[in-house]
Image (cartoon, helix red, strand yellow):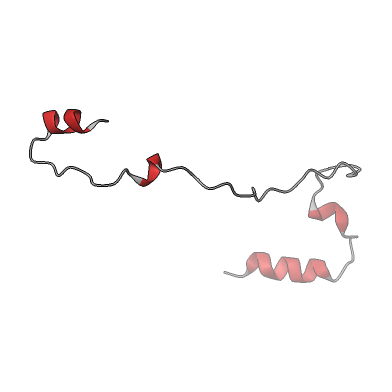
Length: 69
């Protein structure tokens, strides 16, 4: 918006001395992104149930945690 348009809408509004921060140029910065891993072999979904054998001790802990509040 230009200053005359602001004064037309809001005659009592103060005139800004400096341009807003959004109008100021942005300094160049290096983007913080992760590059894709092209050597990744596969991505698959699996459930915890299939990772543990039937008699594994972790199942006792699992059952306890499920009942805990």
